[in-house]
Image (cartoon, rainbow, N blue to C red; front, side):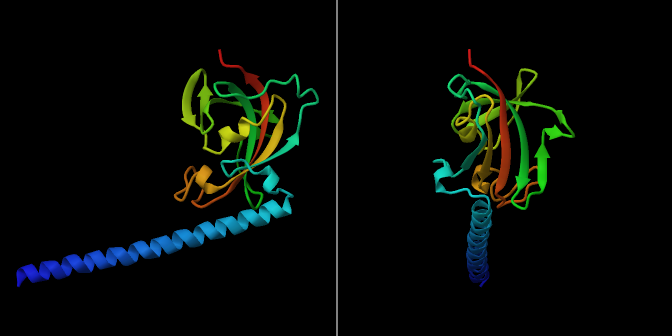
Length: 183
């Protein structure tokens, strides 16, 4: 009798976990679809098309190109890149920037590879940038300013972080102030 109760309890928990997992998956699908729709509206409103789409799923739109682009240093893997940035939600609200009140606090990003970069402070790596930044920075030259649209899977994912909710597409304006070539 005791064994029978254990089996019933075990199978009840198993079935409950199955249905809980299904509802989570449905929620995941719904939230991803909602994110895609919101991003699509933003892209359309701002004239960003498939021609701006990088292989990693990030949209890259140049806003300012240096006049002497053939002479400007291009960002490459291994370089330290001095960047000014402003991060927005799709509704235009700023959530982070290093450009405040006319004062600039440049950030240096070391491009480790196409998919990762580290913030360098006083010569030491302090933390990683979101995965959406390196592919965009590798498109840029010294003096370039661009807008990038980064889906959640290339930013803070489904769980979010640093005050950013999960399933959130982010928009950044990035300006490359200086490219310090790898030695």
